[in-house]
Image 1 (cartoon, rainbow, N blue to C red):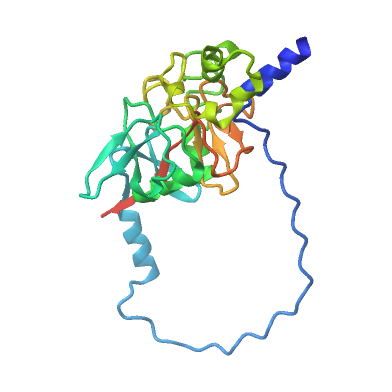
Image 2 (cartoon, rainbow, N blue to C red):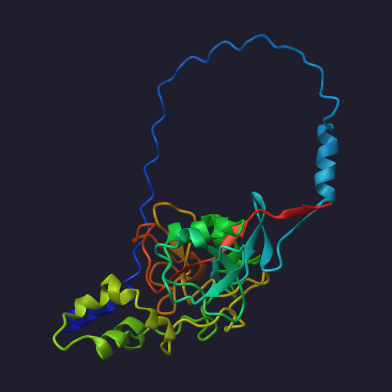
Length: 297
């Protein structure tokens, strides 16, 4: 009985989780091929209209990177980027060019070309979205899904901590409180709604995992920014807990854990799930967008 309960709990907490992919083998060096003889050098006159390299570099140094109001500026080794402060919601675009915010517990299947990502505080973010759908929503907003290193850099903050707020997990700082199986929204909904005698394994079927009522239950997804201390000096919120967040990996990867788990596949900002394909979604899958900064003179 103990083994069966342990197995069941593992399935429940890992329904949207998996272990990290093993590192691929290093490619073998190609056979040596003699380099071709370079062509003779041809001297050309410099372009009179192009600034000298040192002038262009100085001009770049005088400009400052900036981001839209709903985003924050982050610096990494490769340069600056912008990232949404809050987990994204979805706007439904209308024929007249206007847009309305859409409830985050509704799927976007079939309307992928009519939705746009928007990062707002104080609203339950969009779940039930695949990586492929999230990428399109970001693109329509003039942004993109974050690269893996962008996402991790923003989450760890300028102090490079394991969690946004430090190296040691603190209870009740982020929405990652519900470790017990009895708190799992899918388990609670299944127990309340499934016909008697239904195989418990069926609760992990997509029909249950994508039920819109899961976001409306207690002990579930919360509004963006509700956990005010779940942030860092960059001012990004909820990167650990609440919803998984898709990143730009066509093989299917999301980061940060969710309301039931922020440790099974890695600690805090290093939490990575790679089990599901890019077109997968359930109530726990969300996203946020990145983009290149503006350069102001």
